[in-house]
Image 1 (spheres, rainbow, N blue to C red):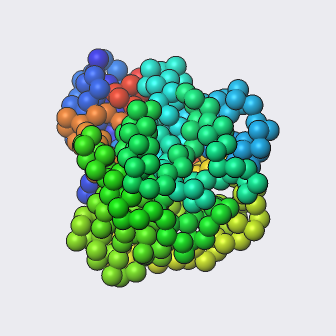
Image 2: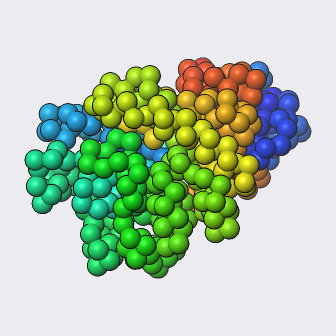
Length: 412
């Protein structure tokens, strides 16, 4: 079946200038043409007045944290409620124009499978499985009174597994293999403290170079990579030395560390949206007030770090890092990055750059032969980037060549 979207303004995700009055033709799962010459198709939809873009990619999500975190860890949230919230989060994410996400810790292959088979509406999901963290490090969110041996009791096999406590090279090798057994596409390690940690500070470094290198070796053996949660420069440099390929957050990056990232072709996925929402509305995330109070300084540092990385030539992607019960603001990441950089750069970060970082050569741009993931926005997001954060202004979403959202646009 051939689907044609006719008469759109097309922004192809490469950074090129928009093409007006263009058609995008889809044959099966792939794009067959993009251009001004009208194409015939089995289904033709006149999208004049809309802007067609590649499907957006969120490179840092936590679908397994779709309920209030503290309440969930206390056991106050039923498994049924957890699953319902995760399924709803998947659908909300797709309807916001995100056709691909990378889950950086908290789910296993269970959720990935039900979405992939169409039993649950949602985006394409790449997952890390459980995060690998050290005892008492970022990712170990248990209360202080809980013995570490009880941490895995919080897992719900087939649905949620937040992290594996990992101490020493042998543990790292074993847990990396366990994460892959559970369906991980890549590995995520926490190598510094975090903003929402209960037992550490952002200035803390976690895991030795040797421990990180053991995870990298396991990932390399499977043709994939390690990304690291990291805020401070010592942790980032340790990860680069060990062979990690991507850094999440990177709020304290300095010029020397950025230069090292460029030298080793290590990517950065900054997370602006979660910082902004922790400052303005932390309640739904289930984060204590004393933790949310740390965020002001981190938010300012992150903005500086992103500018520094972009200017130096680091490959910079886009991730929202939303957590908790309200994850309906993924597009806010593009709004904030549009203000920091510019709307076109923000869009490229969330499309072509993210596809490159995630190793998805068939996605990220609207080009002949690529997978047909695309969205239509009612308006011009380059002139009004707030549209990225307005799901109701995204009437049409296509994933794998199939219309998965259509709020009233009919065949011509």
